[in-house]
Structures are given as C-alpha cells and as structure tokens.
Amino acid sequence: MTETTPGDAMRLLSGTALEVAPRLLGAVLRVGGVSLRLTEVEAYLGEGADPGSHAHRGPTARNASMFGGAGTVYVYLSYGIHRCVNLVCGPAGEGSGVLLRAGAVVGGLETARSRRPTSRDDRDLARGPGRLGSALGIDLADDGSHLGAGRIALTLPETPVGAVSAGPRVGVAGEAGGADFPWRFWITDDPTVSSYRPAVRRAGRSG
DNA sequence: TAGAAGATAGGA
DNA sequence: CCTATCTTCTAG
Image (cartoon, rainbow, N blue to C red; front, side, top):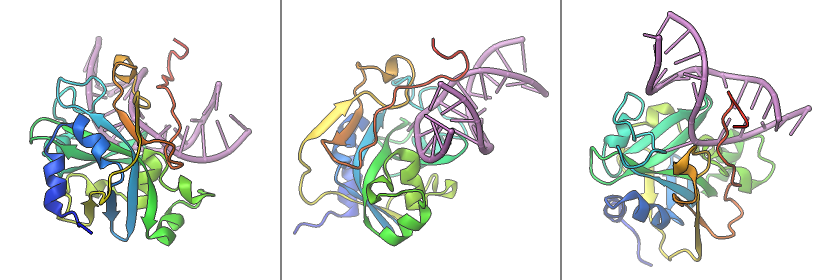
C-alpha cells in the first residue's frame, strides 16, 4: 500500500480550487481523534474571480486566512451558529479554497456521536458543512492553522474514488450559484452527501 | 451607528 | 414554511 505523505497533500493543494476540489473526495481529514472521509466539497475562487466566494471582495478580518496559501485552514461562523471548514489552495494572496460540505466518519465514531446527539443515523453525523464542523469539533480557534502542523491532518485516498458528480453550489445567491458555476463536487450516490437547497433570501422574500 | 444578509440546521 | 443566532459588511 502506498501511503500519502503531507507533501503529497500540499502538492495537490497548490493547484487551483477547481482542480483540487474533486480530488479531495475520498481523502481523510483527521481532527484530533475523529477522522472523516470527504464525500462532498465546493470550490471557491479568489479575490475578484468568484462572486460567491468570501474572498471575492478582498481580505477582511474574517477571511484573512483564506489568503494564507495552500494548506491553511479557514474556519468561519455561519449564521451565528455553525462552524464551517475550508482548505485553502493556490498561492498565498489569491484567496481560493475548498469548502468541506460532508463526509463519512471513519474514526472516532463515539466522539462524533457525542458531539452530534441529534443525529439518529451515523450517515447524518457530518452531512452538511455545519454538521461536519460540529462532528469534528472544529472551533474558531482552528482558523488560520495549517494542515499537518497542528491537530488537523489530511491523507489523500490510496485508491481513486469511483464516479464523481458536479452541480451548482448550495446556498450561493445570484449567478454564482447557478448552472454556469457547477463547482460543487460529490461522490455519486454516496449516502452522506447533503441534499441540495437553493439559496434563500429572508428579507424581501419570494423575489 | 444601524440594519440587512449570510457558503446552515432543525423543527412545525 | 419559519426561526435560532451573531458576525460581517455596507450605507448613511
């Protein structure tokens, strides 16, 4: 068996988000004692290149780590509740990354279950970006950390995954969330992939 | 300084 | 369909 090294992961992450995202499928992310096999991801390009990206308008206090270059971990608070995880790719200063949307828990199952008591089925433990962050015990303190340098590590798949599907990104408003931006990738037919939801707008709804 | 919107999840 | 919950950004 060929084992992937941290260097292999860094090499992959140095590419563009669109090429990195599908190749992260099947990779195992370990955070402390919980390991997750990634089954669903989304690519986000950098400053000025992707209206749906947090980095689109340039660096701010929140998204600063997105500009940290390949291997940086970007964690942000979503809707005041959920912690979502991105793996930054490309060169420093660009601002591109891959949002981790779902996965299957393959290690530390008991810990993950205790963190997600409302999950009635193990496949729901990390089905969706908020749930994924919760199951892994991700904290805002993890923002800006680096793969392999702290408690977060990535191992690439030893064998290639099977069929991969692509489609519009979830919850992204406007044109960047449409069919012209099929930048969400998932392992076809995998039960841990989240269900698609179009972007919603609360104030001035039903537009 | 205020107000709206947001890469969501869970419940009715 | 509605709401929880709070940070971030933008306009004035």
